[in-house]
Length: 389
Image (cartoon, rainbow, N blue to C red; front, side):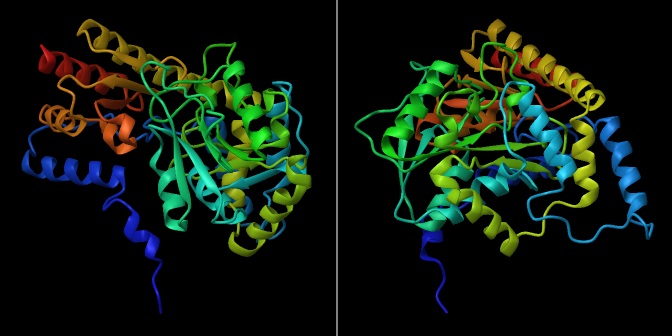
C-alpha cells in the first residue's frame, strides 16, 4: 500500500479549519465574550419560504407509495434542469438540457471536474485565490502557475500571452476579493483559452450578488465561451443552501466536440448518486418567480451589511474593495501582517479571514463577509472602529 505523496505538498491546515481552530481556542479562553463571525462564507438567514414549502411537500411524497422516488437521474431531475435552463435563457444564454448537471455544490464540482483532465496539464489560477482551486490540483500533482491579482489591476488579472496553461480557474465575482470582471476582461480570457486550446473553469457561485447591470453573470454571455468554458454555480450563498447542498455545472457540447460532456456523465454515473429528490425540489422552487423574489430579499439584506462594513472602513481610513457586486469586502490590513490583524481583531471578538491564506498576493489584506445579521454586523463594526481608533 502506498499513500498519495502529493498530500505532503499541501499546507498543514486548510485555511478555514485554521481560522475555526484559533477561534474555538479564543472562545474557550474568553467565555464571557460574544464572538461575531465575519470570516467563513456561511449564510445566516433561513432558507426562503418557497423552498421550505417545496421541501416539506417533497418529503411527504417520499412517504407515499405513489410518489416515492429512489435513485434519481445521474445528471439531475429534468424538472430542476429545466428551471436552470430557463434561468440562463432569461439572460439570453441558451443551453441544452443535456449540458446541465446537478450536484451537491460548487466545492465538489470545482475539485471533481479535475477527474476529466490529465495530470500533465498546467493549471492557471489567480492569486489571491479560493484555496480549493490550488489544493485540489496539488493533491493530483499538477503544475500550477499564477495570474497575479494586485491592487493596481483591481485584483482582476488578465492573461499573459507568454504564460501557457491548459486549465484556467476564474471566479467572478471573486472569492476572496469581491472583484468582478466586465465583458471586455472575460473576452480576453476566452480568446486566450481558445488560442491555447485550454479550458476555463468558471466559478459563478456569487453571480446573484452582482448589482452592476453592465457586468456579466455568466461566462456564456461572452462570444466563443461555449468552445472553451465549463461553468460552475451553487445555491449555497444565493439561496442559503450551505446546510442543504445543491449546485450545478454547465458543460457545453461545443467544448472539444462534446467529449468532456460525455465524460462527466460517465464519471457521475460511476462516482456520484446525485442530490436528493427533496433538495432538488427545493432548488426548483428557488428558481420560480416567487422563490427568486424571496432570495433577492435575503441577498439585499446581506448587501446592506456589506455597505455598512464598507462605510465603517471608509470612516476609519482603511483601503478596501468589494462589497458592491459581492458579499465579500477585501481590505488592506492596518499594520500589514494579515494573521496578526486576525489575532488583533479576534481580541475584540470579531472573526475575519487573513489574506495570506488565499495566496502570496493576499498577504497584507483581509477578508470580511456580509453573511451575518445586521445587528451583529453593526456591533462588529463598532468594535472594529473602536479598535482602530
